Length: 491
Image (cartoon, rainbow, N blue to C red; front, side, top):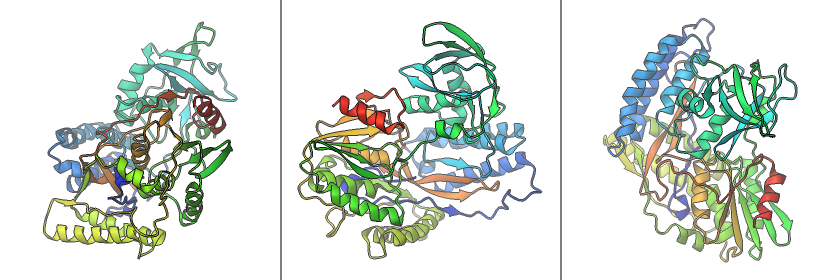
């Protein structure tokens, strides 16, 4: 869920800080609590308070837009809360407030979200066109066939609906290709995870059929009966190295949050990666990567490319991290120690790094400081580091990304794309702000609210900057066989 940018200089160790800090409020799981208006106001107040006291953006003099939205967004969301009558409405209002920060590391998740409904087909994008990519097996009304282009719905262009009606509640980063890809899927889905307050569901859509003819389709919205998951979910291929023959290797770099058992498998994979220095081609496939601990990506790249090359790729960077000093950050770091001990042991560099940071945060809090500079540490030079490869792979390198690549996945891409001659395939990535490393708190409604705790200074990748591939895939990005064939055909 979270990571540190520019860790591939191996001066920094990323933290996975997704922990729950329980607030003193009564949770809304109790049956007698019915007033969602009041709960929404309470949630908004708690979110605003935590942002003001703990988010680095709240005292970041270089980001006036953030500090402005803290208050303006709170006022606008508070006005919307007057129209709340259900948990779904409440979620929509909270999402409205969050979307204004334009930051994937700020989020909220309601328990028991309920079910979604949809119109029987799902859109994707090809260039600037909105194209039907998935169709329900059985529906009570005719559906537009796959590869049809949807022009408008209820006399509004698709782009207008996505921008003015859906984006304010889902994702306002309309400068990103990945945002439009995700919004396109929401046009015909009333998603329980991304509700829109008082949404008017489209009644009909004008479509250009694959043969060029125009046809209007009446929409029938129905509750999902299990088909949507396959169309909307982001599969995560098992993290593994595949020998494709002929000196070609495909590495699924899909999991930066490995469990203890998965860490054991990662150790074995790293050993194999170190032995393919004579390979002709290596494809690093990040599809399904949901972020996590950037140290995992660092180890994989060090095992493949060699530690010296990886360090040299990041030498121009002078990035450093500043933590917002707060009781919330201290509590989150304290809980992170439990995970570090379980995953790496108390004698590991990772545990010692977090412990040192925790003690520094404790002192900074006592001294009433606003900022704490994250100390540097070296991962690659530690004797016994499982990612070290003295020689390194020298063949052709390719990177595959999907539109969900963010956080630790983007840190990984930072280094891979700095390798001379690398070829980028797939879809445009998502993007991060300069705020990163998250903690989580339970809101009065029972929803989980998470927010970042530190800011990067001097990061090479700019705020909310994505990576756009040289070769864009226009099929199903989750179809591994099709993606592999396409990549190899274009190399």
